[in-house]
Each structure stands twice: as structure tokens, then as C-alpha cells.
Amino acid sequence: MKIIYYILVVLILGIVLSSGCLQEEKVPEQTNTAQQPPSSRIDYSHEYPASAANVDGFELKKTGSAFVVYYHPGDETNANKVLAILEQGGLNLYKKYFGFEPKDIPVYLAESVDEYVKIADFPGGKENVEVGDGSAPNGKIYLYKPFGETIPGKTGGVIIHEGVHAAAYQFFGQDKMRYLPGFLNEGMAYYLEYTFKAGPKFNPLDQIYHSDLLIDGVETGNPKLLSLDDLAQKCDGYISEETLNFLCRGQGTFTVWYINENYGEGALEKFLTNLKQTQNWQQALSSVTGKTTSQLGQEIQDSLKLMVEQKKR
Picture 1 (cartoon, rainbow, N blue to C red):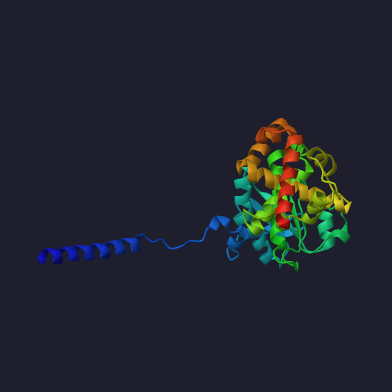
Picture 2 (cartoon, rainbow, N blue to C red):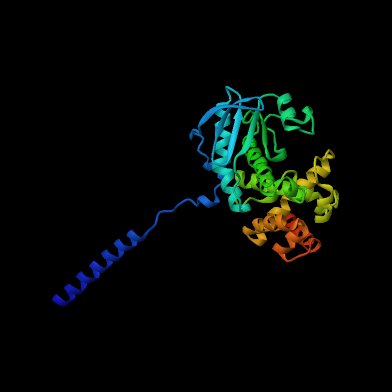
């Protein structure tokens, strides 16, 4: 009987101890911050230092590690929010996807349409400017009344978008910037804009600006989707024709998304570095993908077609 008693005691102790071990080993569920959009992690309460300035008519400035925001008296809150987005969100995205860290990029906050069009040398004219808009000619960022827009999250995306253009300008320099085709320049800017707003695994057909044109191009052939070489020829500079403008942006964004998704996060950095050296975008893309621009373009359109078909199911 004693033997049976001891056996039972040992079994009970074993069950208790194993239960305790299991409880100790149980790890609480954690949120995967890598999948959260960077926009959700911006700390707007952080105060960036302000000081007097006298630059292009702007009296004040706030300085971060990579960006300097110039603004007028009374616009300090917006200046702080702009710097928070660029320093806490944009800077990490630029370093991660493009492999370089910008320095001392100036940002100007315009209070009126007239001021914005004048200092930004905006080619679209006053009639095409809306509250919350931005542009980045010659490596400088210009914003018109940021955070005054009615579309939630618009300004944050615009700031990240224009930051890409300014950072690319600084990376290449004025002389070599012209070798980056407009459709890839805009594509990279939109790609990081959507990554900032929606997270690193965004669905391109849900996010891309006027993706309905891409869907129509696949399903009906109207508008006709452009090859990569056609995109490079037709999508540079300010595009007044609306459909072509939207198509250039949409296909450019899908191209950058596809390259990053299928050739690795380091693909864009490799492309930019190679382009800076060779000044030949076709060769730079080929070095990353192992495909000619014709082959890569067809591969991208095939992927888009498959995605459209899956969306309809």
C-alpha cells in the first residue's frame, strides 16, 4: 500500500510541476509593430527646438536631425507636426527602402495660395492648389496649410511623398537627378506614402491613386497600359492631360511595389545606387532583376492582370 501511495504522490507532484512549467512558458500575445503603419507611431507631443530665422521671408524655424522646417509666427503647431512626421516616420522609411539618410532638407510652410505658388514655382497654377498640398522642386519641400485639409491623413502622406522627392534630389544631385525617370520618381514617392499610411503590406489595388484606370486597362484595354520604356518617355515633368497623369502615377507605383515585393527590400537601394553610377535606368533595373525592361514590364503587367482577376472573385 505504501508503494502505491508513494507512486500516487509522485504522479500528483509531476502533474503540478508540469502545469506550473507550462504556465511559466506561456508567452502573452504581442502586437507585431512591424506590420503597423508608421503613421500610427508618430509622437506629436515631442517638441522640436524653435529659433529665429530669416530665410525667404520665413521668420522662424524648427530643426531636426535631417529636416529644417521654416514657418511664420502662429504656425508652430503645424511646424512641429510636420517635423515629427519626417523625423519619426519618413527618415526611417527612406533609410530602410532607399539606403540613404538625407541631411538638412528645408521645408517651407506657406500660409496662402499666392505664397505657395510663388515660392514653390508650382507649374499647375493657383487653380490646381488645395489645402494640404505639397511639392518638392530642387530638393526643397513646400507645403500649403498642412493639416488644414478635410481628408483624414492626407497631409501626412503628402509630407512623406514630398520627402522622397527631396531626398532623391539630395542623393543624386542636380546633374544626375534627370536620369531618374519621372514614373519611378513618382512611383517611389507614392509607394512610401502608402507604406506610411497603410503599413508595409498594403494592397496596391486598394491604395494606388486611381487604380481604377489600371483595372480598366487590364479588362478593356482602355486606357492602354504603357510599357516601361513608354512610361519613361511620357511621364516626365508636369502632365496636364489627366488620364495620362493618373496612369503614369498608377503604373509607376505598381512598378515600384512589384520590384520591392518580388526582388527584396534591398532592391530599390541597389537600383538607386546603380543608377547613380551608370546614369542608365534600364541598366540599373536589369542589374536588380536580371530582366530587360521589356521582359520586366511584361512580367509586371502579367502580375497586375492576375491581381485584378483575383480581386473580382
